[in-house]
Length: 138
Image (tube, rainbow, N blue to C red):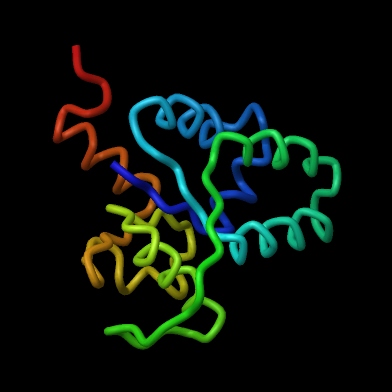
């Protein structure tokens, strides 16, 4: 299973003791975590501007994530220009899921598959993987 991480997920994962970081650290043992260079750069910019002390934690986390160079292409849905490279990255990386906390732009697409990639929030992904007995299986 491949999960593409949006820039806002990378930003949140830069908090080393956060629940999201702990989840992703564990989840990375059963799934392949991928992102794009575009998402990494966006996360780095936001961390530099808002939480510079977390730069080292992001760098450490990125060692566990495959980062790909991806070109944008025509999509089957309409998105804001800034979000096109994110969805293109998820599709081009052959990911099963695009994990994003961007409810404003991706929220209307939550739970939908676009060109083979299901767009989900963290809560949706945890719920789905628990239902499929991939997580928390006794």
